[in-house]
Image (cartoon, rainbow, N blue to C red; front, side):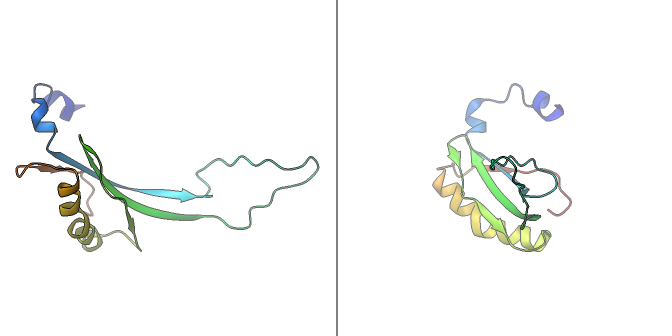
Amino acid sequence: LKFAKEHLDTPQHYWENVLWTDETKVELLGKNTQHYVWCEKGTAYQLKYGGRNIMIWDCFAASGPGSLAIIEGQMNSQVYHGILQDNVRVAVRQLKLSRSWMMQRDNDPKH
């Protein structure tokens, strides 16, 4: 909320050149998700596989989304910097940001 209040009067052309980035964990059939299964009456559903998750990184700007990156292994600062090197310049060109573009990210300590 503080960030939003501080930038209330920031002109639109400023936001058109901001690249927003974030990463998240997506859990596949894990304990933190709900599962809805249709099966015949009188039969039981048994989860044989599950508990996997993947980390993904993505970016977007006012002009659209960037490319999704799958994060292999544990996320740390070295992996994060590799993702930026492989994806940010491509996204800036793809999204047609100006030469004075700016990147916004969260304050995760891994960065």
